[in-house]
Structure formats: structure tokens, C-alpha cells
Image (tube, rainbow, N blue to C red; front, side, top):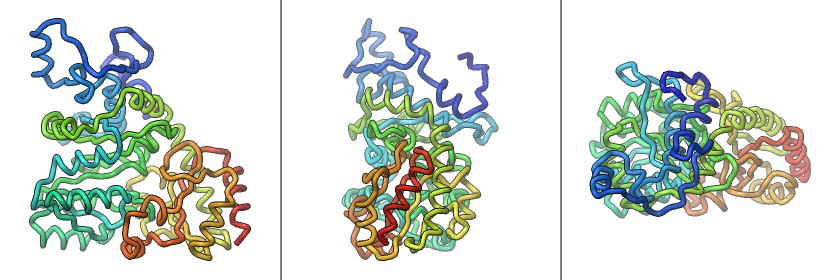
Amino acid sequence: MSETFNLTGISSVAMHTAGHNNAEHAHLTPIYATSTFTFDTAQEGMERFLGSDKTRIYSRWGNPTFTAAEETIAALEAFGLKDEQGNPLQLKALLHASGQAAMATLFLSNLKAGDTVLSHYSLYGGTYELMHKVLGQTGVNIRIVDMRDLNEVVDAIKKDSTIKLVHIETPANPTIQCVDIEAVTRIAKEKNLLVSVDNTFASPYLQQPFKYGVDFVFHSTTKFLNGHGTAIGGVLLGKDLEKMKTNVWKWHVLLGGNSNPFDAFLLSQGLKTLELRMERHCANAMEVARFLAAHPGVAHVNYTGLTSHPDYAVSQKQMKHPGALMSYELKGGIEAGKQFIDRLQMCVRAVSLGTVDTLISHPASMSHVGVAREERLKYGITDGLIRMSVGIENIADILNDLDQALKLH
């Protein structure tokens, strides 16, 4: 595709950003299943090691199959955005073996002993444990506040000069709380702090944090970006290209959290249908949320598409649609929740999210089992809370399955 041809739709960007430019003229980027790459001459080898493109040296450092996925995700996150000079925003993405690996690179490349990371209190369990059980041992401090209260953010930053990074997860897991990215970033930038956003739940189709001036965006690519539950992965994106290619890249390769060619290939294929999948995910989710909110067996529903959700306005402001994730509490508590899950016939009992099929899990015994109960309860993750990732099945079948599983109550 000519560089002068401007793609105007996000599906076109997902399909045509990368994949056609290879020596073999393959329609799709091949799976470069190789641990290392050869050099024709010593001079060529030296030039590759000295150059900025490390994709053809050693696959822990980079691989053409990784590059295709990285370039596509970067194009999706930057789609339609401009930099401070008014030029199209350029981003650098680094593909990792998992979301946890990408998160580790984010934290360790930007924080040192004595620094503090400020974050929201409703976080994915793996992020919470990484912060408290790994970062804590390196001498990095963790400060958790309710970032939906901007006064708490201002107060924390004002009182603690050791804060270097503000990390936002929005929508948050599993309470679906939303943090105002623009407002928090504005506060952080008054003190020249770095800001990172976990955009996993939204995907770049629904939310683009770089629009609001953040420095880093993170995804567990295992989820909506892959979309089919076929591969584990994570990606870290940054707008400081020099830093991403040097310091951040160095931490990435030294920690050994590289992806592998087969998983990167599967990710690239999943990305091509992101827009189509998200449209169906979101349409189905709205119907499910309305059904559950009206059901007599449901105590309450956490879904920002419902006006009853306290973060409805924030969600409307920064997301194209509230998304496919929700959580809800059944009347009858944990026993009612267990019985409901056991009675499901089509919806799948599994952790993770963002796959084409509907997944239902119980955070207290699954994703947040490593978080102390008192901490969970304080943050709204109750014993009977059910998390649901609404799939793209026919909506009537999803609703019928939920209805028959709820009739026990």
C-alpha cells in the first residue's frame, strides 16, 4: 500500500497496516519460527546491532512476526490522533509473552527503589499482586486511592514527592469502575509525572488514552485484541519513541518477556476483525445488562451503560461504547452465585475475557483469590459477585441461558 494513501476506517487499519511487505510476497506475514537470523557479512551484522531495528538479530530481541502485530496495534491506538505539533501520532509497541510481562516492563523501566506508583483501588488481581509482592521487594512504594475522586489524586500527589508514575485501569476489573483519564492526566502532568493506562477492557476501538496525553498504554492482548482465546500475550505502547526503543526495550529483552511467532501470528489474525467483534460484543452487552437489571433475582448490576452506574458520565465521555464487560450480584450471595454458575448451559465457566464466546467467572474464588478478603470487600469485590464477558453469540441464546440459570432463585 502506498504511504500516501490514507486509511479512513479502523477496520482497514487493522487489516492493512502490516503484513504485505515481506520478501516472499506472502499475503499474510509468515510465522518466522526461528530463534536467530543470519548475516551475509560482518559489516551487515554490525549494522544490525548498531541500528534501531532489532527484529532480525535474535527472536528474544525482535521478530518480523512480532513486528506485524506491534505495528498494527500501534496504528489502532494512534488512529486519528495528532501529536503536539499537529502531525499524525507515532507510537512504538513492544509485544510480550503475556500481559504480566508487559506490565513488569512498564513498571521496572520507569521506577526505581524509593519511587512510588499511584493507582486506583480496583485493579486486576495480577496487577495488584505484581505491585505489592514484586515491586514492593524492589523498594518501589505503592499508593492506592479512589481515582474517581479527583481530590484524592490531587492530595496524594501534593503530599508525596516520590510519586513518579500514575497508573490507571479503566474500566477496572471486575467492578467496571471508570476513571477520568483526561482529568487525572491533567493533574499528573502539572507535576510532570508519567501516566500509564491499562486499556485491556476497552480495546483501542472503544477508547484511545493517548488522546488525553498519557505516556503509556498497556493491553493484555490475550483478551479482545486476539479475540478468540488462542494465545497469551501483552503489549506496551509508548509515545516517547526514543525511550521505547532504548531504555524500555532494554528492560523488555533483559527480562526475557518476548512473545513467540505463533502467538503473534494468531494475534495478527484476531486484530483484523476487532471492529466487527466489538460492535456485536457491545450490542449484546447492553441487552444483557438491561435484562439483568430488571431480573428479580439480581441485586445490582455494574455496567457503565446503565444510567444507574456512578461512572456512567465518565464512560460516556471517553468511550465509544460502555463495552462488553459487566459484573453483578445475585440475591442470595455466594451460594446463589455458585448455583447460578453450575446451571449455565451455553455460557462458558472460565476466567479471562474478550473471547467470541460468553465467559462467566467468580472473582472472589478465581481472579482475585490472591487478594485478601478484607481488601476485596473494601473495593466492592464481594463474595457473590459474578463477572461476565459478553460474547458475540445470538443474543436470544445468551438471554435464554441466563434466564434458565436464574430461575432457581
